[in-house]
Image (cartoon, rainbow, N blue to C red; front, side, top):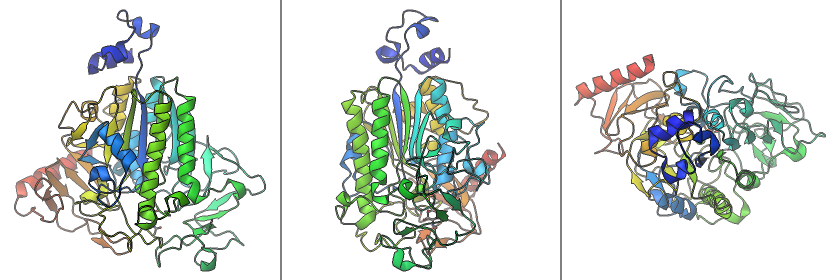
Length: 514
Ligand code: NG6
Ligand code: CA
């Protein structure tokens, strides 16, 4: 029934979806229309200016460029938050993470941030008959409560409770323990001789820490005074304490290969069904330690090499789709969870070797910032059977993927009153050039923008973070920028346009009150 509503409502029928239908009602049951496979590729900390299709001159990303050339490249797309956990929370659930106080950057032993009873984008695909998978970076917690997981058994609740049939994930980030892959909620390659214990409170007796043993840090050292000085795994010290793991521990240089191989396997296994696959890459988050075959290839050190590795991952996924003959009817949404940061806490020479590369393009700020570079992200939608290639300036946000995918898949109805997500499928497919009326974002404070005007709520937090060299965008004054004339957010026009300030402040208040 929902499928019929979808077909009628969105004009996506045509030969592709209506093939074989002989009449209303029973036809939908007789021959299942073929909806597209959908793959979300979510990069980590990849900036608006980090790829050649977004204007980078000193680095080439041919695989992403070719994806962009085969689809729609968006210039005004936004994540909801400027860090991973709140950004991904919103992308998966269609709910603003800032409505909850417990959606900040999750530890590796955090309980599952999305509660099992919440609907996710995977649930909506599953209800439409899709096979669903999640591979790579998760960073949304697993298990019930912080610190209560059994890493030597089944970690529950987990992605299975959020609509994912298959999962192969790192619990948090590359720089947080536990440094193991978790496949279908059990540690992959589990080593019974090295049981795993994790704590974010107390170190384990006899386990050396990065802060005390710099001589054991053979791969990357933490930036002075910048965290990452606890458990040592593979010669890199991390956030959090860990004991055990043995042969289950990941090797940092193989993380991208593992993610690509698992994604390719998933595609091969499900080529004859309709699938939804989330691929969260570890690139280009710290610790950046790409495979040796990328070493020195970018001329920008590990950060640039990790961008090349990300691009390679996209190429591997495309190759697999082509090999299986399913590229035409596969929709790919490629984006980043938040904006770029150059020094995020390891001595990887990212600053020294940056040269004239501008990860943030012309935007101000970066990861952690409410300025544009924090949340305006690369966003490409490719679906050869449906989407006409081009560039779209429509205002779009990750918040709308949930409701838009529900429309696309035609599964269970989305209760729009319960979520912030709205159906923006026409914008994602290039049929609507405008997109949302406005986007709301969070990074220590809130902002709202209609694509032209951007208002930033006053905040008494620090305006600059010296460790990451980030302009946070926080100010005790109200800020108003005209993004059409001043994309770099240099001129605060709040005093000149009190009426716009008032209207946008009011809009934000209304959003908060919902
Ligand atoms: C910060 C980490 C940073 C990164 C970030 C999360 C320190 C000093 N900094 O706390 O390295 O891990 O958290 O990044 O520990 S995110 O993209 O996953 O949100
Ligand atoms: Ca991130």
